[in-house]
Length: 209
Length: 209
DNA sequence: CATAGAATCGGACTATGGTCCGTTTAGTAA
DNA sequence: TTACTAAACGGACCATAGTCCGATTCTATG
Image 1 (cartoon, rainbow over the protein chains, first blue to last red):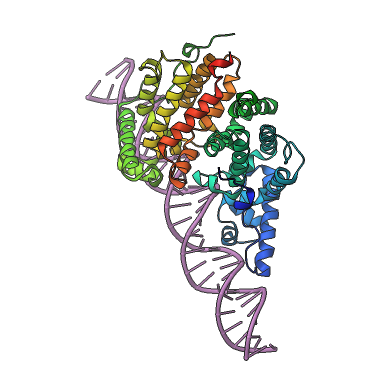
Image 2 (cartoon, rainbow over the protein chains, first blue to last red):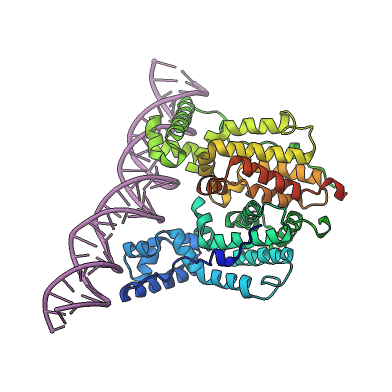
């Protein structure tokens, strides 16, 4: 079996720092936009802020905003990128059970619980960052998928870890989270318990081998 | 344990036929709109048809279109409703394993496979009908959820069937389907195999009890 | 048939994500 | 310092989902 590792598919975050040189005014405007967006999203909720408002608050034209960030979803992702970086940090170099060292099943459980915490704190932003089928190609999602896939493969070499990873991650989508949490009033604790149950059922129980 | 049945939460389809009386012109326009929408969606793909075009093709004002159907997502759902009706028919009164009679695990597998067939045939429409967290409150989704939940509870009375049903259904979302199928080129057969694997792993294996 | 009034119609209007392109400006080299 | 160029700027512009309300049309009733 071919062994995959993070090295073969390096970490990728949305290209916040551009590759080559960046003009001073461009850098300044990018910073201004991110600040304004962060503040407005925080104050009024991501769903209630238009791109025009962000451009105005940043003292920047609309064209500039869209050239920098491409789309609303992409801007939301950029605002989330610091949080995402911390999350990935915890996964790669953090303490067990989220970080390396714990058995894969426990790491999977810890991953989902940590993700649910992120959803609890930033569900609106995550929802804004999820737009259409393209979202699954986003660098952050790819990292999550690779992580879950590797853990699944480690926990149970028999399984189709690639597909199971997609299925498991689908249960952590922002739309579903918001519906369950707000419309149905399901507690965060129950969502976590449900995730644990799903992981336990998905990876082969120890006695199976 | 309280036994739930379909009777306690009757079938609900989007209210295509209005409850009370409907004026003749209203009925005629509703039919015209559905026809035009069906045709245009079919000809050019649901993603490439605007509401204005549908209104024009139906020979109807935009206001009329929106009063009838409320939103783009809702119109897409209405266009799908016939297919959905057949699907539900197959589930309730059809032949096993989709219909009653087969063991719950097999019925779950058949459900997913049938759903994947529907996605294969109508993914764009289903995508158009999925809009935001509200989609989980749609009558059709509720029927699917209830069905999966009952089967899960039957297959394994120990499990939290309510939550597991949501998780399983999340893996059948149109966004994910389109991404896997088109961007990743994964075959329908593999998606079905993955569904079977997931169901087998989720419901307790027979020897567990 | 005539009338009343409630339901419906339809298109102008708004809000908003996203694009375009003429103008401005930061960096560079002479 | 100046001239030059590539990049960035910004706001007018476009497409489209969804709203509003005065004009119109349907149906029931006398």
